[in-house]
Length: 113
Image (cartoon, rainbow, N blue to C red; front, side):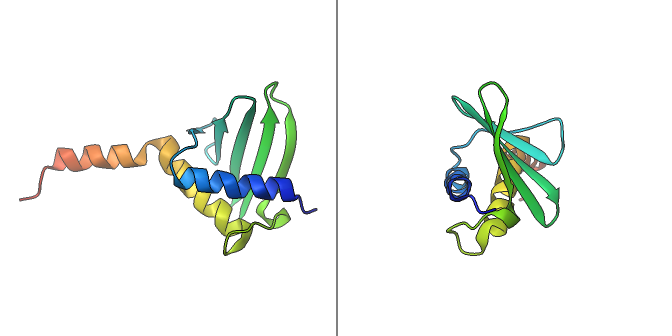
């Protein structure tokens, strides 16, 4: 069932993730990332390589709503799968500190001259 509000949340989260404004963290499940906001927590799960799910929880930890990329139509070119896939990959990099780790590794290797 199409949920335009969740689709709008995915679009906005994706844009804010691209801008580095979402505090993504790793969870106990290696395929799930989460970001906590003042009254909400969002979880982004890669269920399979071709299926993503977003879930929104309230401050008490109760699930409010959830949908997969197959359930949503987003305004971004390529649809919900492309949007959620890109967001998941950016969120994972942030949650795992990939860029900081690579910078540190490059520094350890030296200038290369």
